[in-house]
Image 1 (cartoon, helix red, strand yellow):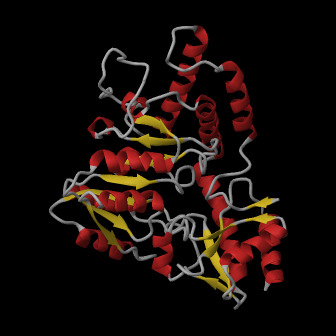
Image 2 (cartoon, rainbow, N blue to C red):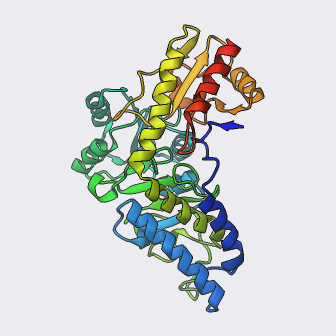
Image 3 (cartoon, rainbow, N blue to C red):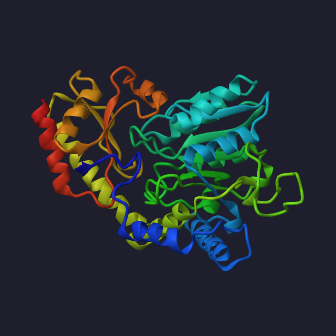
Length: 378
């Protein structure tokens, strides 16, 4: 199988990740931080190593800023529902995933308001102005994706963060498609909250994610329970990361995530980006040669895109094209990609798109096989 659905989750995982998960099931089989015996302490130490590596990777102030979650969506819900109150206003973008839009819609039922700022691909000044014009006196948060999971369009999140800080408005950034592909310096960029998927560009196992923030104590909790600390108190701990980590953690997954972070660091983010983007640029050029193929953006390139490309074949339903590619042994994603807002912005809400997303392991031969299979469908 040629796997080109890495924006959903990366496959294959590096051998180091696979091996580490297997070792963790044997070596770290005890509940981390819940006992004083040797295996429990060893498991807790491995989790701390991952926490430290993640803090260093994103240039967070310290390991206590890293709370492990099930996924990026989980982290996003922690921030949105932990920070916003009735009467608050939020600014978001026109390219958001349902991980943002559905929580905002639910919060709007309880008096939280939000405004969608239009993203202008390739024109960061216009995008920034759209965010500026959406800010109100009661705006309490800016939430936006770092890069669209449908179009690969990269938002000027550093400039948006600086804009927000002029008005004392914090920003939460959805890094599901950027972590491991783009360099992220939390301190330099002024990001207040990072929501991260561990199983995509960081090559960790599914069921891993992170909320990275020095402001976790400011969030109201949406899950309370055992943390292994302050057990005599019926109140949830105030300090990070315990405040956001109730219940037993995904020990094998976190160990695998550490191996994934180390894999990305060893390859180098610039090298991974260049490799994946060269494949997407090649694919774009090949598909653009055929008048029966619909492309919706300019040719992807730095600094306006991450390596994700969506297209359609004439008026064929995107799911039909995906099924035909699957029959040819090629795995892609079709439909709305859990991002109807992004599709509405491009007029593809009815047809959806066929999405291609490579990884560090994808080859040029696989891209050529995809092009040949698409031409066969036509």
